[in-house]
Length: 237
Length: 279
Image (tube, rainbow over all chains, first blue to last red; front, side, top):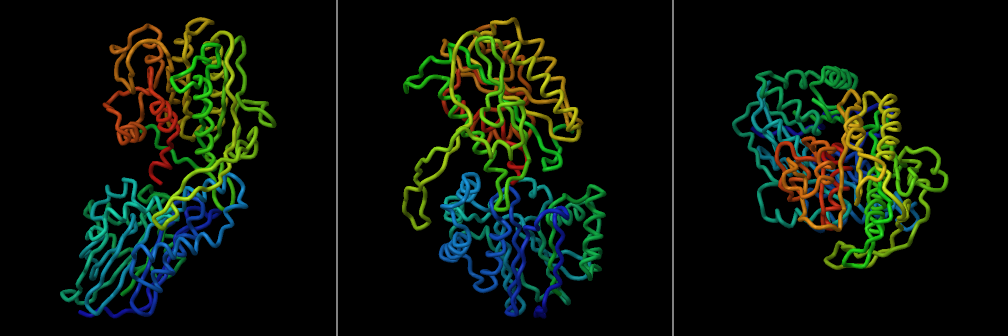
């Protein structure tokens, strides 16, 4: 079946009320969707994640030049030479963020994933595919992230031409497919729930308002089932 | 399970560096630098990294409290100077605000287009090397116990403190082992504090890194420092293993006669909080 591309429902909850939410998301009417999770322990990951998703929505083809353009945009925002020493050191070390991008072509979609944000394809309450992870334990390792310091992106050279970053999904055998993109706390919760034989998708599909999403996340955090982190969900049906 | 507490501004953790400044720390290595100079370089770099880890565009996040206890001659005193010379433990924000001086340095960096460029950078100094007199290690650990017990009382839910002790000599004010044993009993609700020891001896004996037993150590003093050391918790054991060290269950946070890279790694591994490991 061809995926009927519509504006996705998007919900996000910060790690705590007094902290800046470092997740960013963007979509375009051309069937492009982008989600990025800025790493807390870095200089300005909120700005970096915002730059990444905007650029992916404009130009959904990640390569060296794409990344250089994003880094230049980030560098132009901060006056490195006049930063106090600690901010300058933190700026130099780099800001880190995941990048999950989706492009829809009729009954196909291509996913690119760098880091630990998760794409999930399904129908009804059933999960068909997940990418880049399929097991909840994979979220416990330290992910490779896109960085404003080019040295930290050397891993992309090693992956050049590899399929590791990409997945191609077809929806031709699904009657009414949906796509969800989520940052790591929710992704780990979803895969852990599936591993326990639970059916977590229904709860997510029922969410229609930001308030309902906040309530859901706060309940799962309080129960200890979900890690306390910025948490974002995009649902496209 | 111990060592699981989230490190946050509400629940910071603490690093206490205990540094031997006795006279023998002025022995020079092959590069012509004294042990005291080398240790102070590594300590300043460690503080720089800790502050940098907490530095965001909007300001410093107080994830860590930091102290330095320096001992030598008959003194045990703070290793910080200037406005933070009173008291032992300070927030990372106060450390950021109060280096002794800031030096201008240059470093070579990737220009992002396949080339290398020189870049000016600012490097703060908090701790200067000195070395004289005896080695009042027992007094230093006793002082550490007083300071850390107070910190743990007021931070019950925090990840417990990590103490990094650097010494090159034999205690001159009595055996410190019973004090260290008492020190390691101090805990928060997240587990007992971690005491790691670095023995920077110029004496004989091959390098021993993160051992599981004292059998490979030549002298009684090194064996005692081994016994004084905590086992590496899982996330630090993994980080040390990722750096190429042979880590097995029960590896202790102890290094004997390590080369300069080992000493740098000792500080890096010891101050690697779980939040950074997980990024």
